[in-house]
Amino acid sequence: MAPSKDYWQGKIALITGGSSGIGFAIAQSLAAQGTSVWVLARGVEGLKSALESVNCRENQHCGMISADVTDWDQVSAAVAQVETEVGVPDLVINSAGVAHPGYFQDLEIEIFHWMTEVNYYGTVYVCKAVLPGMVARGSGQIVNISSGAAFIGRFGYSAYAPTKYALQGFSDVLRAELKPLGIDVSIVFPPDTDTPQLKYEKELQPPETKALSGIANLISPNWDGRATLFTPAQVADMILPKIEQRKYMILPGFEMKMLYWLSRLVGSGIYPILDWLIARAQRNLQRGD
Image (cartoon, rainbow, N blue to C red):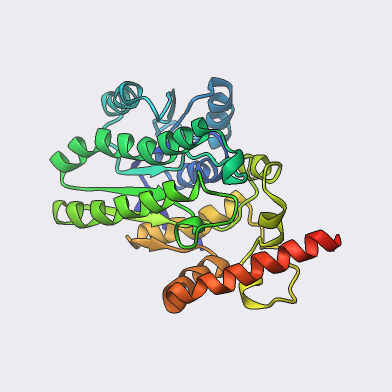
């Protein structure tokens, strides 16, 4: 389902992590609907390539900013640049994120700081920087990209999952505080998506993580455990209509909906199930299955 052209026409969007993955796919889709898109990331070459591929028309004012979302000064300067050149963003997509799986005992403490700085503080900084302009105007939309790891802590993701739990808590509070001011907040829990980040993760995942991949393991113990892999464009097409409808919780795809409702309905009963699944995976690995 494509977003409404009239809804996005003439709006300004700032997208962090906009040079690749889901952020880039959202940028492409919005630009095609008449939005002036600004992509923010660290790598200049990636940004240049992304901006060329976005294909903005002459009446759109698109741009790119090289900035590190973990640096408050760079973030505030980037937002100020967008506001000076095109105006206060109508839509902010916080898509910048990193993940580095591994057994907790093997992960360096710096990995935990890195995850928190990018995934959590990077989102907080961008929201803090754009908020004064949105409040003064009395409108705006903020979209934070989370993960299914915010529902159930995923084996091997001790550095990553807590940042996504924190992001959900932050978004819950932000939604309550900003709605009376005319600003809507959404939080997205994307499914497994074919991105460079996922490829990086798969090289580092413990064997148990790979064996437990996908909600199918929680539904049928005879399933092979492989989750559906979506393209970034497919995920963007699922997300944008929900943003247009100003939905708060956005759960693209069947697996994310099932994971969310399973975590809510089963509650603490999920932990014995997870323990059994992990033990089963370890037995299969020992046998070489």
